[in-house]
Amino acid sequence: MNTETYRFQVGAFDCIAVSDGTLTYTPPTFPPPATLLFASAPPQRLDQTLREHNIQPEQWLEWVSPYICLVVNTGERRVLVDTGAGDLGPDTGRLLRNLEAEGVAPGDIDTVILTHGHPDHIGGNTTGDGRPAFPNARHVMWKDEWDFWTSERAELELDEHLKEVLLTIARKNLPAVQDQLDLVDRETEIVPGVRAIAAPGHTPGHIALAIHSGGEQLLCISDAALHPIHIEQPEWCAVVDFAPEQAVATRRRILNMAAADRALVTAFHFPFPGLGHVVQRREGWQWQPVETAG
Ligand SMILES: [Zn+2]
Image (cartoon, rainbow, N blue to C red):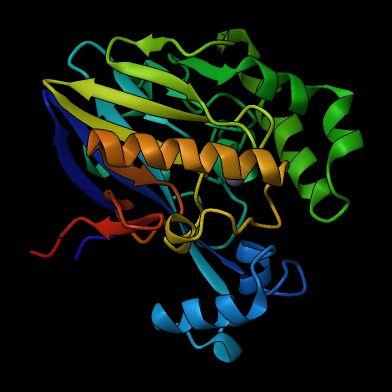
């Protein structure tokens, strides 16, 4: 199967899940995967849940995470959601190549939506020479998120671990697009059919997107869940969740919306193409990936 691009339709909108590559999270740079992703999980339950997902806890030494950006062609607008990680890792920064293979040139993108300021979501804002990679695009971000990363707050409030890499990339890749920036501070349509949904917790101003066309909905949850196990165990927070209690409340709200609306869901870090449905269970929810074989 092609794990670089995947085309699908949401009503009249042509969408493409576009891989930016993968990053392998290994100690000592990162905590072991079980800690990185499920820091707040009770150890016994975690052990059992991992086994149910065919993960042998004692052999789970690294997390190979997909990075999946999204293109939505509404007919009027060509929207890109997140720009990937750029040169963060040896297997990241494939976004532009993969867009080109689908016939999308950087200049064709007129709207870039940045769901939050983490390196793997803004790392492709610039090209090697520091210039905007999407020169004709208005870049849209939640105001609190922009303010956090571009003010003293990030310096003061981020955990020491990973702080340097987070700040270095934010300080390079956010100011580079400030001349083409639009900040939103309420749940509003960014372009017709694409609505910002406040989803704070993972970062201070993280957003989700509700994309509607022809009676169909795509809910882009970005990092409101990092792993399919978070759908079943919404209380289990990741080390990288900035405000864990708020992240859990947001996750519950988003999962409720997804299940109630029977929306197609896209998640940035899930197995490629990151598409599926959230199904309500007696207790909690479950992730059902779309069938993409063939
Ligand atoms: Zn993130």
